[in-house]
Length: 161
Image 1 (cartoon, one colour):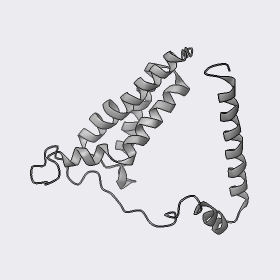
Image 2 (cartoon, rainbow, N blue to C red):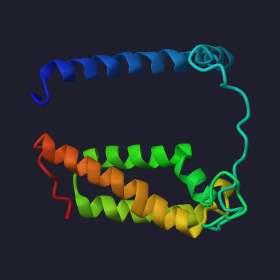
Image 3 (tube, rainbow, N blue to C red):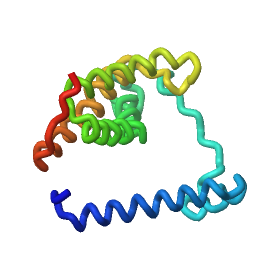
C-alpha cells in the first residue's frame, strides 16, 4: 500500500497489533479485574446510563421551549448516535465501496430498527428522526464523504451486483 504513504500504513498496523494484544490480555483477565483495568481509561465505566426515550415528543416545532424553537431536532442532532451513524456509514462505505449496496444496507438497517423496537425500547424514534436524520442525514453524509474519500485516494470500486 503506497497511498497516502507506507509509513502511515505501518503506524496503522502497529496500532492494530497493539489493540489486538490489549484485547487478548483483557480476555484472559477475570471479569472484575477487566472492569477495573478499563476504569483507567474512563472512570465513568460501571455507572448505569440514564435511559433516554427518543419518541416521547415527536414535534418538530416547540415554541414553549425557552432555549430553542426546534429543541427536539437539536437534541437529536447533538446526540452521540448522530456521530455514530455518520462515522459508521463512512467506514462502511470504505469497506463496501459500492453506492447501491451501501444504500440497500442503510435502508435495511433502519427497517431493522423499526422491527426490533418492540424488544429494545431505545429503538423507538420519531418518524423524522428515522427518515430525515438517519437515512437522509447522517447516513447519507457519511456515505457521500466516504465516497469522496475513495475518489480522492483513487481507490477502485467493488462491483457487488
